[in-house]
Length: 456
Image (cartoon, rainbow, N blue to C red; front, side, top):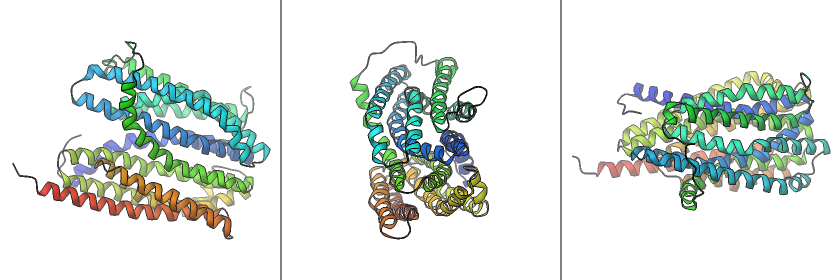
């Protein structure tokens, strides 16, 4: 990164950082997208089962991955302080921690998954697919967490294009395995939704080994000798990593867990409603990768400018990022209005499912517009290191407002499943307003502090 003077230079730098992050995030979400999409092509039962399984798995995945992402600022600081010789030690400690976390997930999952599924009163076929999907994906838990550590190292060194390349390589692997295992092609067994879980698990192993190859063989990473020396577990190193990573992990977990909660609560409705709801939510989640990537980009750029004391430039980047997110959300809203049936057809061939998906996609329009404001604003606040109030606002908007309002509307009115969407939209809209107010306060405070600094 470098200082910029004009809006054009800023937008160019914004795009240079954004595009690799966006491609990486979209590709990662596309694995879940194709699991859901291709399962839906098998049957609505497979779609519903994968929907339930994914809703239980994703919050755990992103929450624990967020903890491991705490390695990124640690490595960045070591590089900035010219302490490259300590990078290998920190990465190996993070890999040890990722292994322990993965084993804990496998043990706890084995103990609680069946009781959770039993408590949901699912149709027997849907429950069976959900359970088999989770068993299949569990084979990839250890390599997935290991990959998140290596990706944190790669991104900390500014090599986001490498992360993008590795992740892009995973997509055709996942699609091919889905095709073979879901539909039973070329002599493979037809496993339906369960095959999607196994395909994802194998894909995680593939990207882990690809990342190891890059880190071990490519010069920009090989100089650190990550795998050249064995290090014992250090609780002190883990404490440092967890101190940074836990707030990130819990923030992401609570934000994603609300959607899992809605899916679980939706189990009271029929299989067609569950399948259609999850399809619409899956598409909205794919669109969410745009504001999420802008969020990550703004954290980098605003933090860079704020650290250099250029408060005006930090504000300009915030406007560029949030403005771009809103503009893109309006564009996708137009696409959804005129192409909702085509989008729904991506998930199912059954007419009644397609019509239900189209119905829920109307709510997805309003949902992603609010997301386009709230998520990038969080990224700006993180750039200012103002993370706790933003987390509290996000928690309140989803868990204090969104979910309770949605439950009340779904349970005590004739809205049914629509009530959950309305509740989440209301919560997210209120959260977006509160986050913007917080951002204006923080920008004003830093401007006052900067203006009162002695001029050299």
